[in-house]
Amino acid sequence: MKIVAEKRALGEIEADAALVFVLGQEFSHEWIEDSTLLESLGFEGKAEQNLFDSTHRILYYALDKFDIDLLREASCKALRLLKKYPFKTIKCGICDRQGKTLQALQAMIVGFLSGDYCFDAYKSKKTKSKLATIVFSLASHSGAEIDAKEFERVRKECETMLWGVNFARDLINTIPDVATPDYLAQKAKKLADDVKIDCKIYDEHYLQKEGMNAFYAVSKASAHPPRLIHLHYKPKNPKLNIAIVGKGLTYDSGGLSLKPSDYMVTMKADKSGGCAALGIIGVLAKLGLDVEVHSIVGATENLIGGNAFKPDDVLTAKNGTTIEVRNTDAEGRLVLCDCLCYAQDFKPDYIIDLATLTGACSIAVGEYSTGVLGYNEKLKRSFIKAAAKSGEYAVSLPFNRHLRKMIDSKIADICNVGSARYGGAITAGLFLGEFIAEKYRDYWLHLDIAGPAYVEKEWDINPFGASGAGIRMVVEFIKKLLKDK
Ligand code: BES
Ligand code: ZN
Ligand code: ZN
Image (cartoon, rainbow, N blue to C red):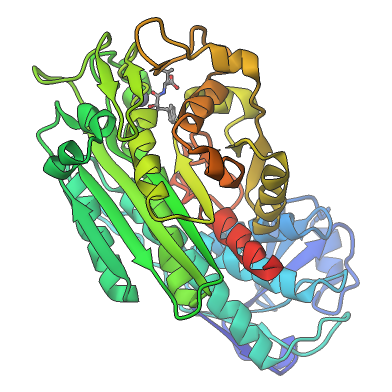
């Protein structure tokens, strides 16, 4: 779907139909052709209410009030409706009431592009929409003033962002029989070639040689060998060096601590953190930002078999820490702890890991939010602000010394699960924190995306299935770090 702009007023632009957002009861707006029609049909302007005026070929879509987040969501949902019509071209104006023209434009483009996403790889009958072009009117109205150059900048940025989000969605939605660790590695290699960045892929022998035994242990029962994926983007004059580490469990059966059947379904999405890490570096490289990025993905399956690692095993991670395994379903932290050690070898200024780490995180903060954990409260706050700007929800989960004691082990340095289930998302974060060297502790963030990564009932701009959670907020945060530099 193409997004273009014209300087002409909305009424003068040729298109098959128009999309007009109606803010509450504001029926007098210049883009509303027939306000009596809205009134006579009982249009109340309540959120998500919509009406197609076939005479004027306008889809009216209601928003309770002017709000950037509501506008993004409405744009996504209105586009899904428009795709059901036989229209090829749709026109619209920038819906702005508070002089937030750029943010409104950005929200609308992101919403449209997300609404256009469809994963039907496994359907015999593909849903084909005719909608090919959206034309924005840039003519000034109600304070909206934006030139073609600025429009192009915003369009390119949003398209790049959604390219990354949709790249991750496709990969996460791919079934586990196909999306094996090596498949992820090959997709990473292709991405690296496309955006001209460096790519290194390591196998199980490398993990053993480097003492990444926690990661290796998780992979042992699988017929598909693990892959450590390392993408590296280095622009000419980087202002910062950032490591993004992602959990890439292409399937999590729980291992010998096997998950009950109902909980196993959707575990193809346990690679969401890893796929986000790939999307993020892709977006940053495409945008050509002045930041060096290492994206490191621990890709493996967690299965059962004669060679499986076991509760009672003690594993030695890359940094020498010994780990008592009491539950093989807490495998993400075992993969990540070695990847985090590996990441610190590249002397990053910041380390951000993304993982569908714990069901406990969704229980704590709900399915819509990412849990943000780390030692530096200021850094966490700054991240959460950037997340909100990006349109993603993020919530701080606090460490404390009592919870830390819950992962003490009697037989090893640390235990892979807490002594009680309470605070499970935090004890998981504290476990990872043990692998962050003292000098990096203030510069590390752990993002638990277990809630928002996979969607079983559409919400906001997220379609059914993989959402691509984490990409928009991390890119926004990195842009902020660069701006403040
Ligand atoms: N991949 C799961 C976490 C998860 C659960 C992600 C639901 C998305 C939706 C993780 O590996 C896991 O199984 N964690 C356990 C930890 C427990 C054994 C301490 C959990 O959350 O139950
Ligand atoms: Zn698990
Ligand atoms: Zn898992």
